[in-house]
Length: 328
Image 1 (cartoon, rainbow, N blue to C red):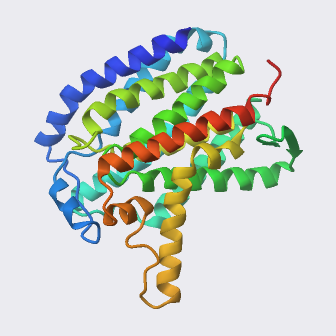
Image 2 (cartoon, one colour):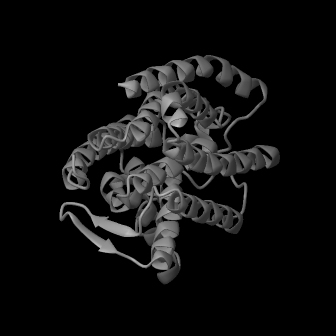
């Protein structure tokens, strides 16, 4: 039951860090710049401290060392590799956040810079996990309990596409108070349950640390948010969401448990494509999807509850679809 210890440590450390980090970020004037083309009422959030993702990232690091030390001593580094993979994305996000703060704008690294860095991280992680024997090129189909063997090169391309896409979809979901946090908590609970079901104690510890860190962060991030996670946090969460799926060898579960992430990124793609096709017309009131619903009268609290609740239901459904992946 070391995953319970992991949850407790991550929650406690993150909760305490919030009391220190938020005042520090205010003193450093690390305030979020709000996009002018977003909902007008979001301008009231201007100056809210950002880069709060550091809070749950550090807390998770402490938790997986405290609760997962025995696993490391046994030579099982799987959970550490996934954490470090997500941390690389968090560092990319931090560089982006610092660039934004430096230039006092909502744009940091260029899209091509972020893409290349994320692609390199995805390829390196896939090669590492394959080399350590934690990953196969067999694609498991949820619910059908069917495995499709793929050539390693094909699987590499697939993995890189899914990882980069997932990371950016989670990043896009972080648009209103608590939304990315609330949606990712059920996803982390799903990974914790699946890991425990498969007897993967190392990954259960990691997922429990994520649940604990996010639960504590939500204290400060729920509407009205006292701090934002920034790209530091959202890219890290994207890395955790896809990293855990690949570590468990069930990557096709991502569109199910991450339907909200998928809907967010698809709404953005549709909006841009439709805008170009019709020379200026909009398919949605505003993209991504959460802004469209906001413009339709949904409050940030309603968005949080509906999206998080929907994700929880989908995660329960997904558990039934993957529970027979390995013999128990």
